[in-house]
Structures are given as structure tokens and as C-alpha cells.
Length: 141
Image (cartoon, rainbow, N blue to C red; front, side):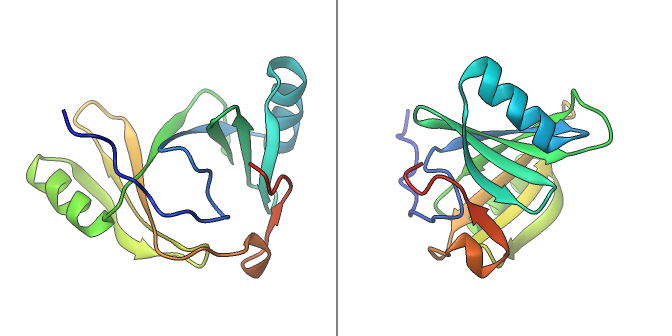
């Protein structure tokens, strides 16, 4: 078994390699509840549609969706282009080609044969969240 990739650091992304993305109709209310009930710490706010929470060395992203109970998984990779090519060969349905975003990540999305949605994210630059409209709440996280 190979070791997980060592990804570059980017202040706009949590440091962990696997990041669940959970859908909630009201991300602010969901974040407040998860902080109070489970002890998460707010890390980053992205407008009113996404909030990153951390817990120890892990993280979760809350994303605005019409109904709760849906979600996807985000993995940090060291080469999004190569990872996408490998996934395509293995039969993944590529939903979004590798694209560089203003927050310093190159990401692509795919669906596995079982219906789960995945996003793979490569750090291409360390970007201050304030540069693209994010609000870093906990710079230590």
C-alpha cells in the first residue's frame, strides 16, 4: 500500500487529506449546532453558502443544499490532472474537468459507479481567503 500524497499547504483549505462535504439548507445554523453539540471549531466562511469546520486534525465542509442528508467527499491530491486520468481509465464518470479556482486549488469532480460524488483538490497556490471573498475565522486551523 502506498502512503497518501503530501499536499502543499493553502490557507484556503484544511490541512487534512479527506474532507467530507455535507449538505444543509442553512449552513450557519448547522455550523452553530455542530459547534455547540459536537465541539467543532469554525475555520473558514465562504459567503453564506459554505463553512469549513475543524475537529482535531480533521475537517468537514458544510455546503448549502435544498435538503439535508446529502453529501460528497473531497480528497486532497498532489496532481489533479494525473488523478483525473487514472479515474477516467478506471471508469469514473468525470463531472467536472480539472479547473484552477481563485482560492488556489485545482479541482475536478467525479461520480463513482455506486452514485457517490467525489471532488479531488490539488493545491496550486497558498491564497489568503480574503483575496477571493472568504473569511478566515481560525488561522491556526
